[in-house]
Amino acid sequence: MLNKLIHVGLTFLVFVYIIFEELVWETFAKPIYKFIHSLKILKKIEDFITKLNRYIVLILFLSLFIQAEFLGIVALAFLAKGNVLTSFALYGARVPLGAFTFWLFKISQDKLMTFSWFKTSYDFIMRWIDKIKKTQTYKDIKLKSKSIKTYFKQNRGGLKAKFKSIYATLKGLFNL
Image: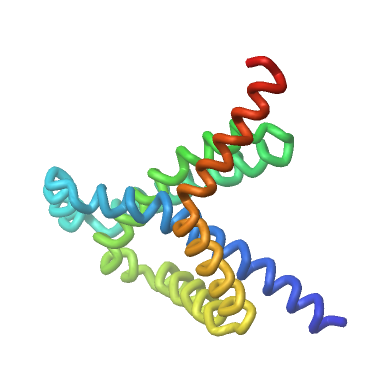
């Protein structure tokens, strides 16, 4: 019984992780991160940040990280209350903030890792992510999500036509 509960819990965590990785990171955050990273004006900011004291970098990183996480929690609270649009808007605001925070982490990682508690926490999280990625559940869900993603890419035109047809039918029914 305990093994089944652990398996269900692990499956849920893997599912949430894959949804985040595939939907949020790959679709929204990664392109924003790449865009931010490609801006030439940010090169000056990168140089400035690398010259900052490690405590200032830590405070800057943590303040952005906490804000991004807070937006996620508030978005979840609105979703739980049934305010779907507000929830998606808040989570949408979180994505660029998270991408910027990730960019800041990447350029200041060496300074942040000088804090032993930060490095320990980071290593702990990375070990758990690695453990999750090695499970068969993760591999199965990842494989299924890739096949679904491929299906949608291959049938993009067909799905769009179906949605247009449904919209036209509904429009005709309700005389819109």
